[in-house]
Image 1 (cartoon, rainbow, N blue to C red):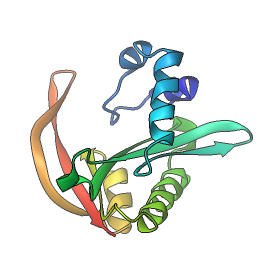
Image 2: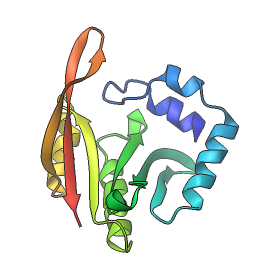
Image 3: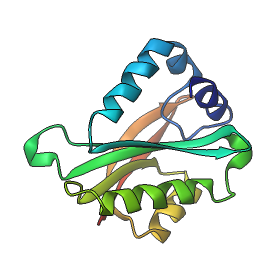
Length: 154
């Protein structure tokens, strides 16, 4: 997973994580995270594989307090050579299916950079709606990007 994540961050201007961030993670950190996901019924991490290679991943966590446990957010990565081939759509659709079968989760949230038009169109096509914006939430190369907050009630 760490190797795939480092590949996914190549030519990935819309990812909030960077290769430098990833270098701070150890194998033990990843193992602890996976154990945390496996013990919480309202967390999920799904992966997409092609020819025994990890080509994409999505992870979801719900709120950690009773009053916000009904909602959570996800992050997704897809390797550059597999983008625009439906991998992201399948991952999000799989997450939606899982959430519909989860007794706690009622709302799936995400944040997407305003210039990531392809991702925004994907989310809209899956009935996510814009709920608001975080102005100048991301700074890259001296330029700011708003983060668009989107959600789907299931």
